[in-house]
Amino acid sequence: MLRRDRKASAEFVQLYSDPLYRYIRFRLQPRLENVEDLVQEVFLTAWRSLEKYQGASPLRVWLLGIARHKVQDHYRQILKSVPFPEDAEELKADDEPLEMLLATKQAQERISAILVQLPEDYRTALLWRYWERRSAEEIGAEIGRTSKAVERLLARARQQFKEQWQRKEAGQ
Image (cartoon, rainbow, N blue to C red; front, side, top):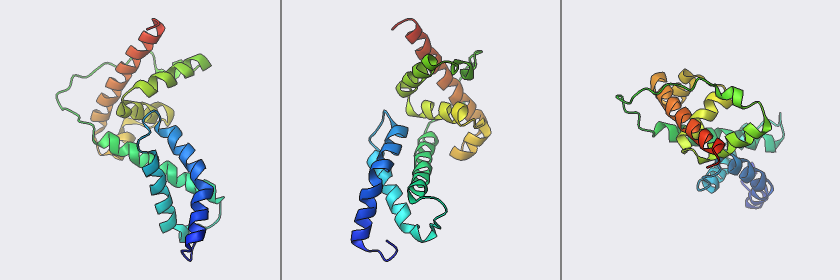
């Protein structure tokens, strides 16, 4: 690979494309139109920086780390493109925190089902806030928005999540 041998490159791609595809596909579902592009970006990045690989971890782990960053970059771009009107009404956050809903497996399944139905920017914001425990300031710094704008996005995302939750409870 370091000598840019085409056969070695083809074997490399063949060996690692399935795990990368599965990893990226899982993180982008239900919107899968960018999976192939991100897999290619991972391979290009790995190919360009292969000489930096020191072998401290298995090559597969190194590639999945690159994939994780590419997925984060993808969602960061999505959140950067979200319009944040300055005069938008501030929505009140739900009194019942989402963390309490994570208590049971049934709730986790319902949460997953609702999250995949939400717009991608809402889903990403909620996952970063509640799954990765990022603050509004951290998210804002990541996507180039103010923490106030992120709080408004999170409020709208929580409101839509709550509405979907209540519809599921009502059996709709």
